[in-house]
Image (cartoon, rainbow, N blue to C red; front, side, top):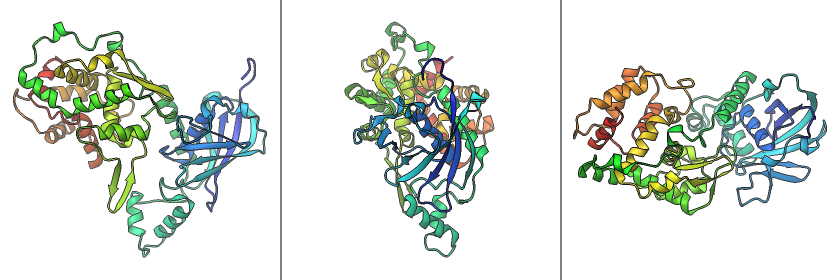
Length: 425
């Protein structure tokens, strides 16, 4: 935008092609945003999960994420809406999930002066629910709706279980869409990746003179065998030896990289989820929890730097990690987990608000200090005691996920863990 040009708002109607009755949304966005940001708005107002690739086609030109080598497309982050030169009445397309092939027609209805820039983007209106992810495109969605509407249909129960117990194709509330837009904006202001903790800025990985001989031979052996430490070395080694660029929308590792890193882990995590007889392949880093957790820890410990559209590379601390003693390597991970990682990443959605209750770290540390040196404590009853003391109430799936997060994957609160807890005092 040239200096002095006023910001304008585009009113756009977005409608899914080949779906009847129509699934549509009317949105109002700034003409200053780029096409990646428009993609994010569409995802939120429809209710898509942003698991798959996407592209725009405008005046015969295709725009998307150029990091995906299979496609010869223009960089969506370098093109603003204003630069497209569209006029009211013109249309273009947005395709999401090249497997299911969800094509959306976007028609520019009006170009308006901006009255309140704080209220952009927003959803003005819409109709009907977004189809479920991976339902099989328009044909699969039609079959899905037919099965749900007929209790005698042979696929009725399976589809009902798959979709989570209920689905109303007529349901849509603009307030929900605008809440998702607000949540996306908040997440963008506080991104998961890229923040360098002050305690790690220009600090060496560890100080040998301080570390000394504090760890016994047993502790060192425990640390050396810890799967998480070995998995961290696998992740850092991969990022050191390969050029890896974070996804343009989230900054996560591309799925191909996730699969290759996962294969190098001590206990390689599955790249798919099974639900009954159905198999659902992972669609993002976040769905492969052990890799995502290791990545979060590496970022929190300032071992790596990167983010949306940026090259993930090792920091100076990350380079030092390879030559540090095994017990120091584990201490680095525990310290990052304790001080720098938001424990709410272990949940599918935020049940705490902006931060964890203040009693969580205090209660966790109190319970950890009660463990006897040399005594092996089972993780599950320990976390159950923490949940009870803090007063959390959640379902089984959420409890399992927070346990995985607290476990440091294989830490299991051994005597070595007790030694490290002493260092937190």
